[in-house]
Image (cartoon, rainbow, N blue to C red; front, side):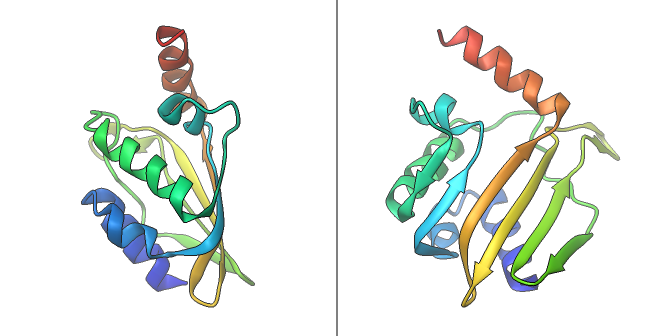
Length: 133
């Protein structure tokens, strides 16, 4: 679990999508409110590594965003097969997109990944969705 916590952050921050997708099971599910915005899909649910990789690649392509600072407190929580951590809104250098990452891990791979956005990040999503109508 700790390895997923460390590697996922490292690969995502460095835009290493090929390494990042290897952390996922073949039939993994990813849910994020960013899915419809980035890949023009009605649902926020992606199934399988092919769909997830397309999302990761598009998200990487659309960065940088000054509100993605990648700050974490170093605290994470594990219970059973669930791993949770937060990118809090408030950082030592100002505000960032506030996200909670929740992953179910089986056999060392992510099988279910849900990304929850806080109020600050949600405002950014709403603005982006309205601009792209």
